[in-house]
Image (cartoon, rainbow, N blue to C red; front, side, top):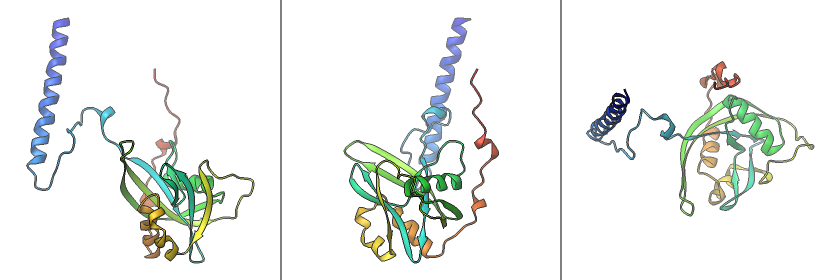
Length: 207
């Protein structure tokens, strides 16, 4: 019985290797397709995944609110933004991040865009791809009893010209890209992104 079990595991391993190599060969035969990593549709634990973030594009009287924050590269400018947390919709996550980073309530009213970007830090070998969902909306009054998130120095209101002139201090090229898209009138309804009710359900205990 043990020998049969070992043979089955070995057969499964070989089958997986054959499947992966066959799939890669087919991909390489397609013009313009480059396989950077072995294709592994059978091992979800090791599959590459991007980081999901949300950003608030806040405009008032022709100026945009940015935050100035400490990073490993020094002080940088960014849109109020952060990672999507477990159990929340992208719009809710954007409202939360905006409040935490600016101390202003923020209500998303439209999606500006969905963006894919890649960040590499040679000193540490970091190589991270981000999916950013950017929202515009209505900003409320400052809540003086709230403190800004750790690492954030201050908020600033900047004209589009000032934002463009400070591009070398932006944390990501998406800072300016999102603002330019907003200036161009790019808007999509919030229901373009559907959040299934299961997302907010509590985790089921593993037995």
